[in-house]
Length: 114
Image (tube, rainbow, N blue to C red; front, side, top):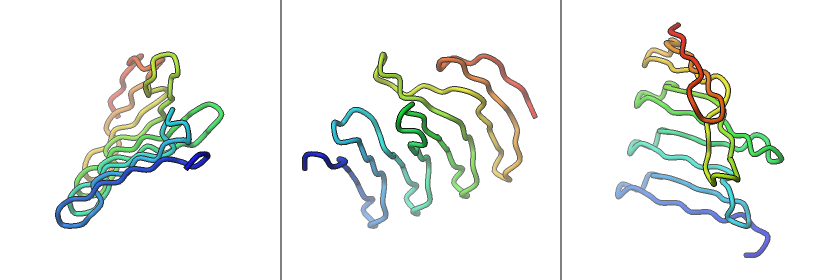
C-alpha cells in the first residue's frame, strides 16, 4: 500500500455511492472528495487542480443537478484545513448566477448580487 493513494467509499442502502474520499499517499490532503445524493447525483465535489499549490475546485450542486456554488479552495498546511479563496459564484436552481462572493484567506472580503 505504500506509495499509493488511500481511498474510502461508502454506499447508500440502495447501492448508490454516498461518498468517496481519495487522499495522497501520506494522508495529508485530498486528491478528490465527493458526496452524492441518494439518487446518485453529485451533492458536492472537491477536485485537486494544482498539486504543487494544493489548489482545488469545490462545487456544490442543487438536487436537480445544476451547480449551486463553485469556487477555488486551498489546503492550508498551517491550519490543516481547506480555505476558500478568490471569487465564488452562487446560482439558483435554474442555473442563473445570483451572487459573487470574494474570499481572502478563507474570509469573506466582499459580496455582490448579480
